[in-house]
Image (cartoon, rainbow, N blue to C red; front, top):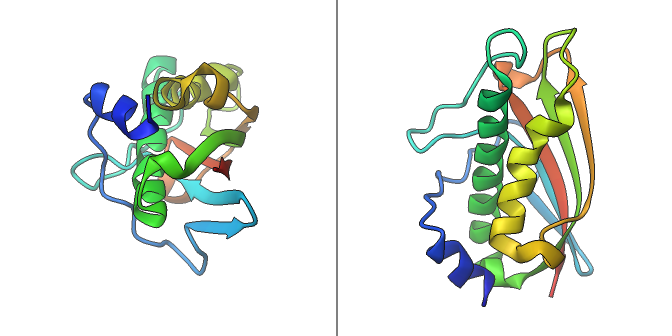
Length: 153
């Protein structure tokens, strides 16, 4: 099944691709790799999910925010590539969690993103290398920021 067909079968809604927040490109393609700039948890109404996980947000809310980042990133990839079917596989993910100082479950938060990638791209192509770290703050107080690298087919 193609990635686009799998995505359609999941009945997921994509937010609009986010506007640029600085001087950068949302996706840069070098050879067969697509480097995706950091994305935040943009909702369908155009607002961001904000707050610090472990203080303002629960683990479950942080995980939901990470999943929303994945949907936001997919919106950007679809806009930039024309189709999710151009993606061969997820290669690498860096997840940043806006976390309280004593919060230690960063990987569990970023699992929200990783689980979505498996749903859309399958277990072979949707799991890549990954880092999940805490941050003392993120731009606009967003809950999660994620950047990734995808191989194009």
